[in-house]
Length: 401
Image (cartoon, rainbow, N blue to C red):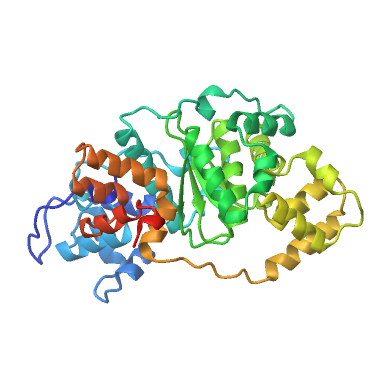
C-alpha cells in the first residue's frame, strides 16, 4: 500500500516524545542512502547539528513531534508510526533486487531512485491486494513462455513478438511514438507485466524492473524521450524474462565489472530490445545503399518508432558503420539539448504514471464496494479530496461537454 497506510492518531506535544526506536531512525536514513550531513541539510534548522541526529540514532535524545513528522513525511518518506516499531522492518535491499549490477552501482543509487524502487514495491503490494493474489492475464509472458538466454537474440525476440501477437506490420502502422508506447504498454499489461511511469529527475537512468512470479513490474522514466521509454520497456522485459530485476543505465560504465551470467544478462538486455524493435530481416531490406547518413538514420528511427541511437547501434552491430562514426554521432547527439516535454496538468500526469488499466482496476473495486474512498486515495497516492478528479480521468474525452 501507499505510505500513509499507518496514521498517527494525534500530536502529543512540542517536547521530545517517548517510544521512538533509534534503530529505526538509523535504518530509515541508511535505506535511503543518506548521510547524517544530508539529513541535517534537509532539516534546515540551525539548532540541529550532525551530533543532534547522531544522538537521536544512538537513543541519547529524540526528535520532537514536528521534527519527527518532517523526517517521516518529507525526508524518509515512511509512515510516522513505523518509528515506534520494536525493530526495523524487513525489506529486500537494492542489492537483492538487482543482483546483476555491481555493488559500486548500487551504492551510488540516488535518493530519488531509491524512493521510486520503494514506491514500485508498494505498487506490487497494491496489485496483489486488488487482484486478490492472482495475476488476471490469461496468457502470462513470464509464466507461459520459456526462454533460454543462451539462445540467439533474434530467436528470442521473434518468440516474444509471436507470443505478444504484435506483428512488425502493425508496429510500422502506428501513427507516432506516443501511440507506439501506449500500444506496447497495453500489450505487456494484457500479458501479465505491469508498467508504471514517473519522473526520475535523471537523464542517466531510463527505468528499472522488479521481478516477481505473479506481479512483475516495469518502471519507466517519464523524463526521457518517448522513444527511450519504448526501448526501456523491452530492455527491462529481457531482465524479467531472465528472472532478474534490472536498471536501464549506460552499461558501458560498469560492464567491465561483471562476470559470467550477470555479464551475459546485461549484454542480452540491450541487444534483445534492439532486435525486438528493429528485426534483422526487415532492417537489412531497408538498408540497401551505403554510406548511410544522419537523415537516413532519422527516417529509419521514425519508421520503427525508436530512437536514433537504436538505429545507430543496429548499424554498428551489422558492421554497416564504423565504431568511429558511431562514437562521433553519439557524442554529437548527447551535446544537443533535448526538447522539453510538456508534463501536462497534475491529473493527466497521474494518469500517465499509473496507467488507465490501473485506474480502472482501483475504481472498479470501489464501485463494487470492496474498498473505501480512503483506500482509493491510498492506492492512487492522492488526497481524498482529489479522488473525484481522478475518477473523471476515466470518462472518455468525447463524453466530456
